[in-house]
Amino acid sequence: MSDFDDLFAARPPGLDRAEIVRRARLLACWRPDTPADFALLRGLYSPDVACEFVGDKSRIPYAGRHIGIEALIGIVRAINIEFEQSNHEVEDIIVDGGRVAMRRRVEWRHRGTGRRGCVDLADFARFENGRIVEMIEFRDTMAILAMQDESSWP
Image (cartoon, rainbow, N blue to C red; front, side, top):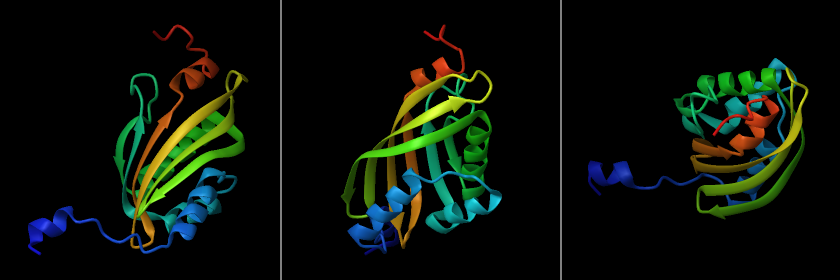
């Protein structure tokens, strides 16, 4: 195979299906209670992970594509400052080779307004050599904005 072909070839996930499901569930229910808790993310994600949080960047400041585990940890910290999260529920997990799709629901409380709501999330990740190298997350933006008291969003 040529170098060009190698560029587009899927690399092996390095994990069996059961371990991919276990790690996806672990991440779905993970909460950053202490700074040491971020060691889990550093162990599960590649140092140069590409992550994308889908949404309107003018309303959701962390929306967009970010590269690297430290960028991901910064986003998780920012979300944790603004929101308290509880009652994590995994609705569905689908695994196809090294790719996983997960639908989940989390109860959130905005720390500033005190408003509560359920946020539905869809996460898509790709594993290579035992670590997540790409992650895309869709969130219920309207639920988040309502908790932030931005109900006038069109």
